[in-house]
Amino acid sequence: MEIIATFVASPDADPRQDVATPPPGATMVELRADLLPPGADLASLATASPLPILLTLRSAAEGGRGPDGGEARRRFFEAAAGLPAALVDLEFERDRELLGGLVPAERAVLSLHPRGGVPADLEETAKGMLSLGSRLVKVVPEAGCLADTLAVLRLALALSHRPAAQRRGVIFATGAAGVATRLLGPLAAAPVAFAAWGRGRAAAPGQVTPEELLALIGHLRGRPRAVCAVLGRGVAASLSPRMHNAAFRTLGLPNLFLPLEVANEGELASLLAPAGRSALESLGLRTAGFAVTMPWKEAALGLCDVVAPRARRAAAVNTVLPRGDKVMADCTDMDGITGALRDSLVEALGRRALVLGSGGAARAAAVALDLAGARVALAGRDEERTRRAAAQVGVEAAAPSAAAQCDLLVNATPAGSDGSVPPLLAELNLPAGAAVVDLPYGPAPTGLESLAGERGWRYVSGRQVLLFQGVAQFAAMHGLPPPVSAMAEALGIGEAAE
Image (cartoon, rainbow, N blue to C red; front, side):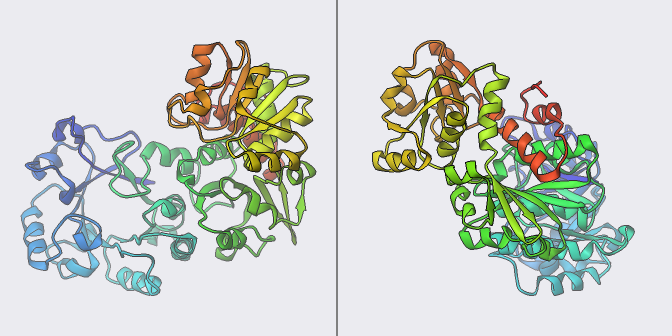
């Protein structure tokens, strides 16, 4: 697979030295002339790159900073004709008259970046572009909702029926909702993917690094045999796809786990349907199962036909399995809690436990600890909501100050996920030696992790919880023993007990 990394200059580095060290995994460098810093010399950068160059001048009309006018653009491409560029990007709406003349067809990427969603005539337009004979055709609309994502995937999958040597369509979407298309597109249409130069150095919303791209789809050589997805809001940051795709790689399974942005309950219902009837199945993608995350764990419960008793008690599901004419559901978040405690050698039986929060994750944690033999209470800022949640799952309601009488605490709120220590956490007065479990996780230590180090508490990370809920989820979805060590390594937490 060709991975084209779009160069975005760092303010702290010399651009020429920067472009000379492309990110690992990249096979080509895109020089966006419209994104270069003032005074940067395009010719100097092109010769400094150790990889072939794709030269691009993205217009303002299509999301860039370059000129829209045809004459200004012609002058740029005339001046750039002598540069050592392997490929040149020509915009279909502005530059097509240069195709086959100033820019030979075999060196041209004919591109279109529609703004404001996916046009109704996108497929017809793409077919017209493909008929013009350029080396590649790149069609990249903005995806703002699930319908946009599905429309782009439909186009990419339609092109996958061509013989591999004839696939020239680079089809994906920008935006958080477009991340799934960036993963499936290169497997279905042309085997070309665009990637970010590094973390925090994306040229467009939703762009991932070459390393992330290879971690998620590097085990595949074409469209997947089966697809799974995590459904929620903000799922582009979820580590579940990395964890599950690492398991597929280890076991040699040609499956794919995607992040899918779901904005409302209507979109959720279109996915959580019996086998053969979901929105993904309508595209010809066989669905093995879904992971459901915030804020849809409660709504998903009402869309499922068969629900595990523990999930019904918590009124929250995180694992949905379309099987025949039924939609089955469970809550492996509970396995995440108990598995992480077991892996950390923390016994729940007989402990006095406090769960911070009152949402679906908190209720699942309370049920898990109760079933494991702990004496459990829920604590939240909204006293009435906390009382209702506690009554629903059959545990006590308490104030956060009750932590003083507890030796086990679960943080089932977002508090501290950004590394800060908000009052809810700072005021916890657990005794030294108590165990604390985080559900949030991030690239840096959480607020609770920092407090645990300062106050002598045993800390169990959200990544450990994610691992063990994912292990149970994988087994449910695929009926196979999960490769625990590979999944743990993908999450960056080292060895875990098999």
